[in-house]
Length: 299
Image (cartoon, rainbow, N blue to C red; front, side, top):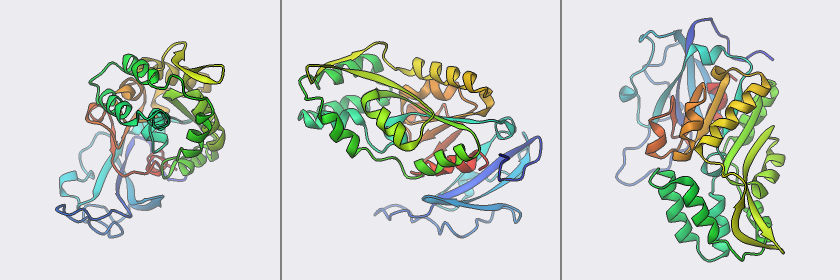
């Protein structure tokens, strides 16, 4: 299926966007009306909208400075993203996402730890790992150990508690309508990701396997830990199998464990991300909706 956005060869896509509902925070500058067209948006720009955002997109000659708004001059609450011509023109495309705090709103290991009464302890380690202050594999083993003895049945409660990010279903459906694949790779757990993947219709996924013996978690994971290197490896493997060039791969994540994933992609999206990841991104997306990715992909 062709892209819905009319395009010309050798042109970058420019998107200016804002959240459609930004709560007021005392002491912070109020966001401008997201429905009002900023002065720096050209008259020929195409209005776009989706779950939780509104914006305008247009094309400019690849590599030229003209036609690209200065982010500092945009109204409060607005941001600009640029998709290079090579990425915009690539077809087919593929979307590969991290899961915890990217595809879903929560951190699964913290939901599990809450059942063991150790949520605060585990959350502190998770936060440090996502900032890049701790080795991910070592931190995962430490956090999983806190789950030892939990009845495996609590996994069903966690699956029921998981909430996809706003716009997750919409971007997945749009990619599928275009005939493109959507995948997820996680430092979390297969026992939670598998039912989520089925619910959302993901084409491929990988995560860690929690060891269960006699109906209880042992506090260990089986096999190779899905760390940042494995995430990038899966992106390359899946895209090769699907016949998608690197330029056509869009990757989204939020923490330090996603650095290699984003570095391996054609378009790297840091989603409400930690500072350690933001410097590796082509697009820093601070509007909490994945549906913006649909527009970046030209859909």
